[in-house]
Image (cartoon, rainbow, N blue to C red; front, side, top):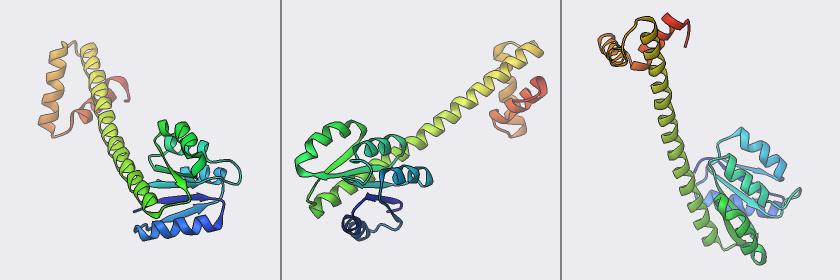
Length: 191
């Protein structure tokens, strides 16, 4: 399990959580003691799981959990006293934060971390898919701009411009994007 961040003000809790993650096969475990330090750490690395042991020295921790869930792809597990767990869960569950009541049951924590890992993998897969789709949209826009340039400067119709780009891509063994970029450089001086 790569990239786990433990946010805990108490050394005892930090050591216990490190032990659990180590038993689960975690390789890279980082620890911080405050919410502010954790927020800085979110930008520094791509965490798979973030464990927040409340309360923290500078805040309770539920705002940090919501921030972490919204600004990272990590699975976030919030450890809260049992009497407050339901109240805190209502505040954070819409953000996708897992709440585990304290005192900790090792099996329950293990299950929550596994669920957080699964959520992280799902989010990362969706981000990859989103990036691929975004690239395709950018390619379509670029090709459409190149078609417009061909229509304007070569007085081609839209089907003729489309066919020209397709033929040029096949004949020169380049992608439609590369052909469109070359057309835009020629007619618009850039792309």
